[in-house]
Image (cartoon, rainbow, N blue to C red; front, top):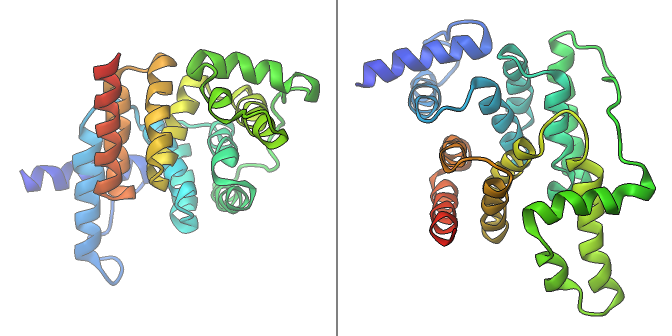
Length: 252
């Protein structure tokens, strides 16, 4: 069984990175062999996520965890298995409301390093951005379908800040980013969920598990994405997220 996982892991590695792994490379070849067996041999074998989706999830997780070297490497892997530069960009851009601008800028720099290494011409062509006067309307249309009024009902306490916070979320997360072209809303929700798993934000993970299901993703797709997180985020974060998925399905 272990030999099968190792063989499968090496095959997936080559598919992603375009070359077979060197089993003796680096100072810690034993550790890297375990890494390939677990991530590419074991985790990649569960669920029906295509390689492109898995690598978009991976770059999202690495951006959330601020791992620039690995993010650059997996940007190139994502390109190699069919993700477009624009899709990778949208995956990273869409993290800004959750990571904040400074950490997202760090991730963009690492992503761009990977794109340049793959001879992608930068800057990429612009995508349609929601006009300033339509941010709230367009954002509300997406947010209502996935989350209803729960944020406004919780935070709007009649004060200026209590009103501003939920409006900022609507305009910033949904109006500025989820309304952009390049990725479907369901795929954006899945990537955001994985970023939240990586950051260990349990309440938001619970909410976005439900958002993924309301966006039309199946339980099996969300479960496979959570499993994909595990070797990057660590097991506790993935177990907690899977617990939230089970609770959401039971409540449905």
